[in-house]
Each structure stands twice: as structure tokens, then as C-alpha cells.
Image 1 (cartoon, rainbow, N blue to C red):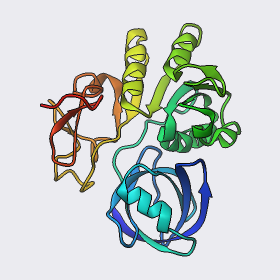
Image 2 (image 1 turned 90 degrees about the horizontal axis):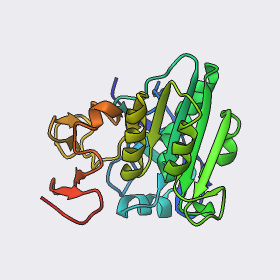
Image 3 (image 1 turned 45 degrees about the horizontal axis):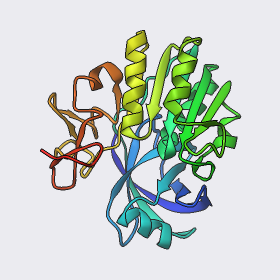
Image 4 (image 1 turned 180 degrees about the horizontal axis):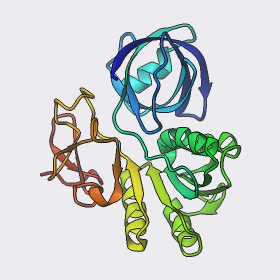
Length: 271
């Protein structure tokens, strides 16, 4: 059920030079599901969608990356004790299996919803192999916390400053040659997720991806987050969508900008 919730910032952690964790105490429990998101409004800024990184009692954790005007404003202005408004929880979350072995493949701050998922899966006794990629050591997130929930963690950095040198999909591909997974979950840069989904489809492994799109309303009205040509709304039917379904859309190729124009994922061409 979508609700407008009052919240107060109780703790702020600088995770790295561009990501902060905000722990927000709410007046009622969100009762969220891993993979869902909230629309957050901080006084003086616009309302934006943020994935839920954890929920414990009446405290919700949001990882907010400094990636635009609104998030930069929140990073600069937000202080402990400040009030915020949350709308949610919104969207469709991940499918939680009850047992077996799963893989989570995260890139950058895409680790946020997968952290929440991993915590819930670990509570069920599910064995999790977590693949975490970043450009450099300084951009890795939640590594120590993940180690308490995961059976195995594989880390790569593009510059080789930590873990394997290269992109995380290369490591994941190697593990797929010798490991069996009941389902694979992924979140991060879209081209990374596209590669993960393709690798899974080639091997007949079920997969789910959490997408990032330009979400304005959060209730399926504005059309800014639609996946063409089948019309799936990421804000409602997502943000978590089955990999086989995604391959029938423009996932990995195009998205829409703030003016609803189709923009290539590489940011080069438009149509």
C-alpha cells in the first residue's frame, strides 16, 4: 500500500566520496520488500526515487549517490534531525527463493537493493555468492557488511586497485562455468546488467534485474519510465523485471530522458 510517511534523519554515514547512507526513522513501518523503492522529498528539493537498502523496524536505510542537482543538494544540506517525507514503498521487488544458491551481481551503487535482498535471503538460509564491481577501490560499497551475509564475495575493480582487475561480468562469466545458481539478481549500470542477463539466458538460468529509469510520478501515469515496445512501466511493473522479459524490450539499448526522448544507453544517439 502506497503511503505518505513522515521521517526524521537519525544517522548519516559517508560510504565513499559520492555516496552517503541516510538512516531515516519513520512514523509508521514501511513494510517494504527487497527491490522496492521510495520517493523521497527533502525540503527545498524535488521528489526523487531511491531504492531501499534496508529496513529494520521503523528505520529505513537509503544509499544516496551524488549524481544530480537534487542528490547534490541533499548531500550538502541534509543533517541529523532534519525532517523528510517518503512516499511508498513503491514498485515490484525481487523474487525471494526459499533455499538453494543464488548469485547477486552489483555494479557501483547498484549494491543498495541487492544488500537488502542478500540480508533477507541469508535469514532464510539461502547461500549467496555476491559479485561486486566498481571503477576503483574507493568506490566499493558495503563490502564489510556484505561479508556477514554471503557465502562468497567476488570483487573486481576496473583499475585493479582491489580484487580482480577488469569488469565484474568477466568474473561472473568464469564462475558460471563451474557453479550452479537457482536464480541470478543484478543491479547496476545497464550495460553491465544486459551482459549478466545474456549470460544467464544462454545457460537457462532465471534472472531478475532492478532498473534505473527517469521516474517522476511513481504510479504509472507520466510514461517517462516505459520500456518500449511492450509498454512496461518501471515504476509499477518494475523496477525489478524478469530477464527474459527485458530482452523483449529496449533494455540495454535505449531509455527516456526528462523530456521523454529516447536516448541511447551509451548517451550517443537519439530517436
